[in-house]
Amino acid sequence: MRELARRSFLALRTVQDEVAKLEAANLIVSRSNEYQRFYRANPEHPLHSVLQQLVRRGKAQAKPNPRKLPSRRKKGRGG
Image (cartoon, rainbow, N blue to C red; front, side):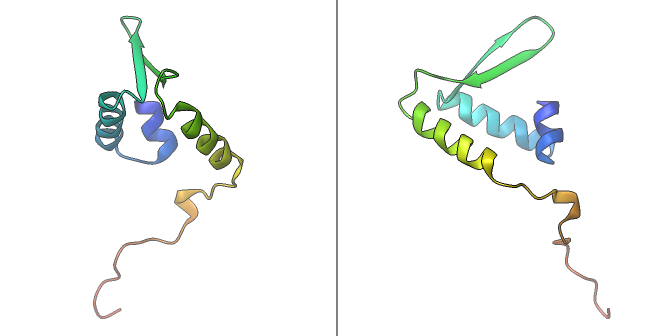
């Protein structure tokens, strides 16, 4: 989860919530080795092939670095 949070620039709690939703929808499955939990797409899910295509297309797109994007914070008054 921490690696996903780091790579996605999202808060750990946000990643935990989203992964829980995906697991509840049976879109992902997990296993544990006592120290870590591993997640993967569920190949048995009816939407697996469609989602796999979407991921491949998204991966091929150039991704901006969120840290280099303009800030979305509101500017202070009087500025």
